[in-house]
Image 1 (cartoon, rainbow, N blue to C red):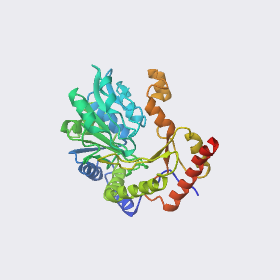
Image 2 (image 1 turned 180 degrees about the vertical axis):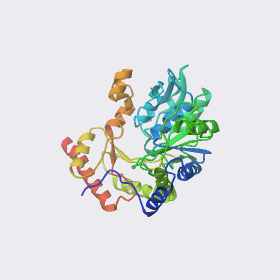
Image 3 (image 1 turned 90 degrees about the vertical axis):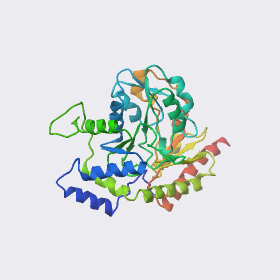
Image 4 (image 1 turned 45 degrees about the vertical axis):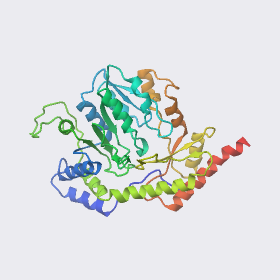
Length: 374
């Protein structure tokens, strides 16, 4: 059996709306994008939504909108997809890393305050794998020190903690819709914010810096071509029409994995903490010490089970080492997680037979390490 790592859930309605957009004379900056923005903002409970062509673009625009620039520092996590730190380098700001909580794999708020300097301008928490970061603690620190908070919620549409949606508590947030995310637009993202000023700036900058009136070739600031097309937005609208069913499917698949893996020696499964609701982006297990993650991954791949290590720490990415001089051991919890985490096949329509096959092969791979110890 071959089991893919991910697969988008595309149906008749998605095709219908995309074809409807194709039949329209407007293929960019049209009604579908506006509707998608409203749907995302309304779902999260935030006033403004700004559709962009990727989560990375959205993060970049927020860094600029918050006037973060050359020599400024932003506190963030080393355990994330590299874009959450790269967006700061785009503006010559410096990411200042704080190690993660070994249970949640999110930034550890207890390490933030000691990293604050006179150059610190913001905190950028990431809701890793769809598990909400401790926004209460992060916001408390940020407000004390008058720092902006940019939520990287690219993996967390639908996550919440104590009734508050991921992306709704900071000054602004970004969601992303790559094909393996909870919903997909093919490529794309949406910025959400309660600030009218931030929303206006982001709308302008995503469209080459055009002014509020959108006059032809009238550019009032530096901008970018970060627009979302009507085709991508149409796909997103159709997905958002059934967001509840999509997230329920993903919870069901995660629950089936959890039931099958909870008693498997050597494997730690992801679980929500008190008051938390995980939005399942990926299903990432952790292997206990003594089990070689890379050998387990090789075993699974050879048997048709797609799997990937999530994530390599950002500070150990080659160009970060070269640029900043980081060393192995600088952020031990992030490094430990990076060497032990493994993303298993995970998508809405993963079948019981596929889940059973993945679990069977994983159990075979893990058990070999226990047999070697004997």
